[in-house]
Length: 305
Image 1 (cartoon, rainbow, N blue to C red):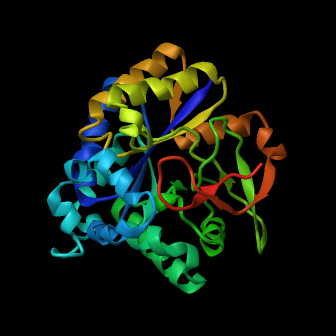
Image 2: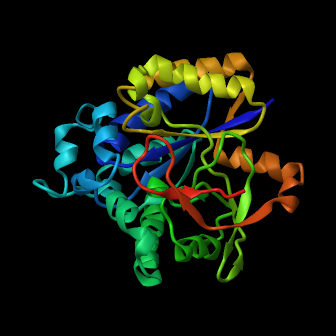
Image 3: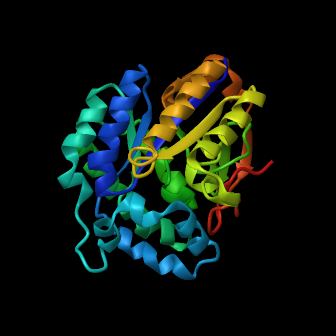
């Protein structure tokens, strides 16, 4: 039975306070667990407005109704309103999902700052940002993070090396085709110790609105991939989208996957299944690579072949 790992990226204060509890209740109804990756510092979502000049950004915004999903207040954080500290204002919601038995890890410190800058930043800036997120995570949860997942699928070599220094064993920082093949990165310091499990399935916001596709159409497109593909997959959802307006669509997707016979798991359970079969002894070591993917603006980290 193929496994589909549920990876929840939590980008904003609203997503943490509203979307995360909504997803927790939904997953509880289906007796499922997911991996929640938290943004732990300031919410500067409004800074993302400067992406308006990036190719493809306006098209994505118009398709996915950013104002409707995120709310006007969130879009003003860092512009006309001060950016709230997510880790301070939403610690209770974070702890609750952890105590409910879900897997928790780090997404980032400052989501927009990381996504827009990390590729070209130096090791000192990178390590400072990452250390802030580590310290805040331990402060909130009382234990170190199990895993990591990069904001916007953006990293640099120093960031990957930091994961190894932390002792992170598995992470999900890039994208690949819908056929999961875990790999290790080739870094300046040598072969990475941690294993990469890239997101393999398209996200809802990459499908909705393309050629007029509705939320239900997006569900059908994802289910068509997993129906015909017997391999393990990683699906990334967002607390701001699937945890709020797209919650019914996500539940339809869950029902469809269960009907197809898939095993819906955390990232840790996916990693354990690959460890148990000794397949990780033979996985590829690949260079860090970047490329554009359909219906998302800018270049992302991608798995080479």
